[in-house]
Length: 77
Image 1 (cartoon, rainbow, N blue to C red):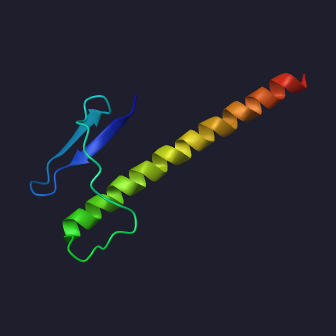
Image 2: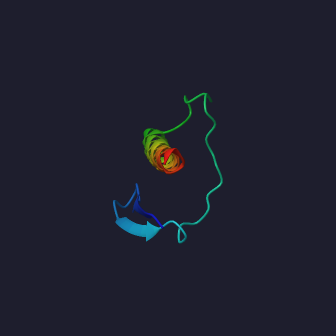
Image 3: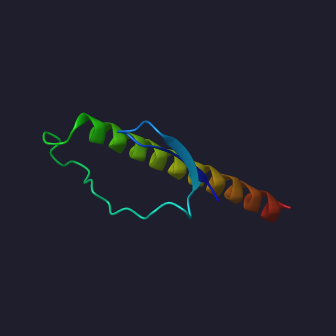
């Protein structure tokens, strides 16, 4: 279970919730879409979302590398 720090843009209030408590939000960004009509706040939010996803993916890659190394060591002996 992972905790996520939430920051409300208009009020500045921050809260921590675990991922199961977070409401599932419809994906409202498309990679490569025109950004002209999107506010600075929304662009900053998108950066935060994408950075969190990059962090999540890198953690999964590290976990899989560790699992693969462990299996290689096990089967080598």
